[in-house]
Amino acid sequence: MKGGEAVRVRTEISDCAEDEVVIRCRERTDSTDAIESSIKRLVGMLSKREMVLYSSNAEYYIPFCEILYFESNDGKVYAHTSRSVYTTDRKLFELGEMLPPNFVRVSKSTIANIDLIVSLRREVVGNGEIYFKNSEKKTYFSRGYYKDLREKIQEMRLR
Amino acid sequence: MKFFKEIRLSKIFWGLGFILLAVFLLLNAFGVMTPVLNVIGGVSVLQVILGLFLISFIISRIIRLRFTFILVPLSLLFMVFETNVAFVLGMEDENIINNWLLLGCALLVSIGISILTPKSIKFRKKFKDGKGTTKHNQFGSHAIYIDCAKFAEQMIYNYLGEYTVHFENTEHFTGGALLNVYNKLGSVVIYVPREWNINEHIDNNLGDVSYSGQSDENGPTLILSGSNELGEIQIKFI
Image 1 (tube, rainbow over the protein chains, first blue to last red):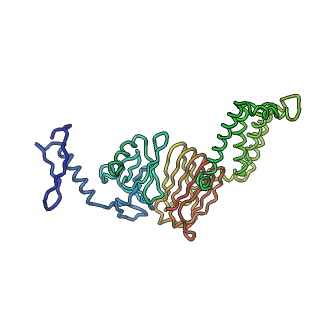
Image 2 (image 1 turned 90 degrees about the horizontal axis):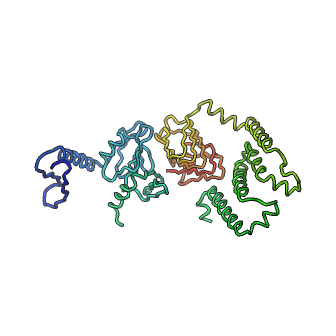
Image 3 (image 1 turned 45 degrees about the horizontal axis):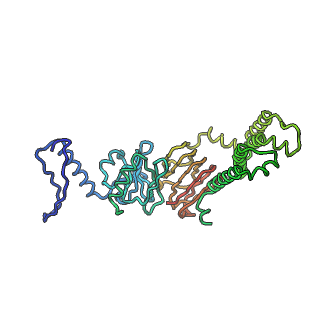
């Protein structure tokens, strides 16, 4: 697998005892190593369904499905659930790499959980607001991230 | 009626203002307004536009019970319609009073009133004392996270922007803290835990202060103070 070459991605259904991901290649290269480590990280994250967050000097184990969005502000990164605000010791770019694929960057300072998005409200200038299911909270998306955000939302929903 | 409840008062005010202006311009273009305007000595379109804006500003100050600088727009209004006033009063000289003298006097009286007004002195003292911290936002979108472990007093100033207020470490909140919000032509959203009680006395001027959700009257109290001029403050209990 040489750098820049297209890689086929397919899923095979078989009678194997447990699910596995196999990378089939002609030789091991930097690209295959990168794909392998990415898949391992992703599989690890998907198997862990909770995240360690902090509030009032206490640790909380919050399921991903409850986190609406992450926002960086004044050097700290905050995680929002519908009722609470927590902090995390991770940087936003680290979260971008390790979070499940339903967490999508929506602005320079925000990563949102698209599974919980109920509405996007776009303004004339291109930026807009994001509303979440069963929550009074809203956050904002930037014009530059709107196209990707909308595509990813549409991939996961029927039209 | 539900429609009018859902949109804020300032929007109704400015919306109707612009519609009335458009109606006036159309009627004027067809010459319908000419006989009416001639009664008061002929009023130009520019005078009407300036007059409407000045009257709007004066009304907003009166509603807010703040008369400090009301004399300045009043004198400007007089300057705009000076010839018409002279015409209605039957005076031959259109120049009733020197405009610069009138404006200067209005400004001096306003400065005098602002110095004598206790509210003004109190506001300046707060800044000098440096109680709490002040966060500013102009035009942009900004969020502030108030740490309840250290929260006693906080001032936020928002001008034509969108400001979001969150509270973190809410378990440490014992009540009695003061949040001063000064919002001009902008939007402020404050997310308050529903276990808290709110004691709100925001000075609202042609804007909208709205609530959503339920609070606990027996919970620790957050004091909300400040002013809202032609803007929107939403208090959401989460």
